[in-house]
Length: 155
Image (cartoon, rainbow, N blue to C red; front, side, top):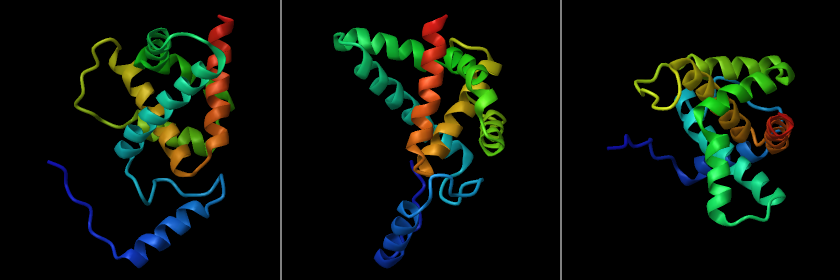
């Protein structure tokens, strides 16, 4: 069962939403006031996958199954671990800090098709994407995805 989050008054919800959408792109502090590290990783998993799927749709006129197969290759832990090596040199100090917090997150999950190290690195990447999403830094998400996919297509 899910733990319920405390109910907030409608006025308080409106203030939170207003504050969130009023953030500057580089806004927000870490750790997140809204989400914990594991929640950012959970969110970032989806953010990364949607960004990858969007790029595939923008650049390839393929059937859905072929697009899905490509997305799976680019979204698995092994690939995400390699992606960290690609983008790490262009990350800001703040982004590196977020990545490291996510990478160091201890999870009971045993990866099937990746080593523990690859899985931890992938979790760090997902945490970064989750935090960028929370900060509404959509341009940076697109920039990092472009760097990852450009490097991959060159190899």
